[in-house]
Length: 285
Ligand code: SF4
Image 1: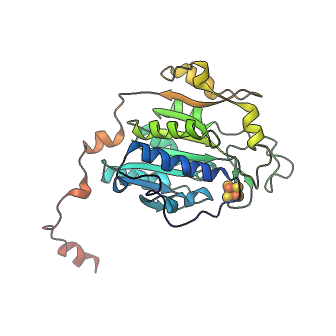
Image 2 (image 1 turned 135 degrees about the vertical axis):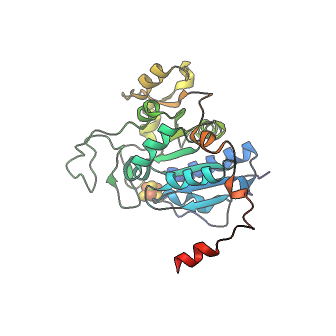
Image 3 (image 1 turned 60 degrees about the horizontal axis):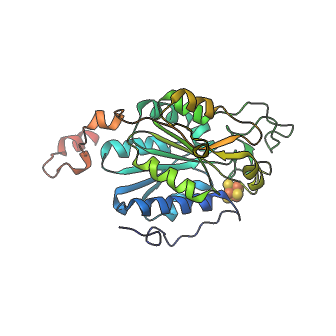
């Protein structure tokens, strides 16, 4: 079973110093090592963005897709081989903006995949434009007078849309984050893990000091994640010094789409050596 060192590829990230992507990468590798999953049974999928390079740095199967399209790739892989552990990792712009439609419907289906979102509230790769989770009033190259839009609330969206594991971690609360990722991966059903992380280059508001001052852990206050109404109430909380991180909602026992669609049958393992495709090839000419 792989160690963290064995899960590390020879490629090196070129993220900015203090970027939260480093800590999340560390947390993902540690969670996988703790779970003792064989590397060939794990697929890490991403879209486009600074953090979407993550699959290059983890020695499992990996796929870096198109902008916003990590989730459909993950869905296809899970349906073809339900034995795979499938994880996506992409930014807030990629997942909540460009790929939002995929996110909504995959949560609704309760697909058994884990979606990790590097939520730094800006588009880092394309030079700091405001993103779906940027707070109103934030000044950026695309909002020099302050963003006019209210931010999306991904956790509330997950809870009401059908995700059965909804959590938020913080890249500088490493042990807490590793546990959230580990539990999200083992959860049977759709897991949404939003990860607060600083973009040290383009987000000068939500920096390490801001997160330290404003976040608190749900677990420290005895939150019951099986209580959906309470989970939604906590997802809506965003006051000075009172922004929760932790496990908001968990629902066990609900069938996932892949369970219902495949009944555990992995079509990738079917023997196709005797399948005659000559007619199909002839038609294609
Ligand atoms: Fe990280 Fe922001 Fe730099 Fe991108 S621009 S690597 S998100 S700090």
